Length: 252
Image (cartoon, rainbow, N blue to C red; front, side, top):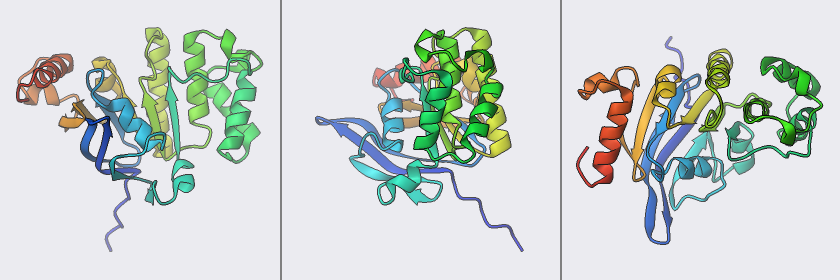
């Protein structure tokens, strides 16, 4: 007997978003399997953050659907979003709360089981023991990023959304964060959608990438093999060539 196919952790079908007559996300369709880390890359304004905000339910799509772990977001928002979490450097945690206080508040919001044990586990994983009673507003950007990622893993999400999680932090901290996310995807079979402008990071972390331009996917595939498939020496060269060419109106 054949095993039943595993349902996608995220399925996007013909997703679009218009603002004042301008199409920001244009008929986007893709899926992410459990345990897969997918990079969503593109120039500023390509539609990456708008896509993430629609998956989070912050923005309502003009048309199309978002299905998270088999649950349609539009039909059962609460159940779908209970399976998601999010981290971005532009969305810091409340600075007047300590590390533990922040994790406890958000853990209660997500109704995370065995919350105290989960908080202690994440504080250990992200090397935050010495800061557990420190207000988040007093932490460095790298330390705040680690707390934000700990928050994002409190409920062991089936889908983890990371919008440029390593922007503006030092290379050592960024490498540590990448390792934590890889470990999480492998251990918990959580799916990850990761936006980044760092092509080294995309190549090092992502099992698949999609290059977005004007709200549409130009190309997708394995970031380690895509450059050679398109006659480019590096992923950064491919990104620049396709993004600029399409942005200027040229065919990809």
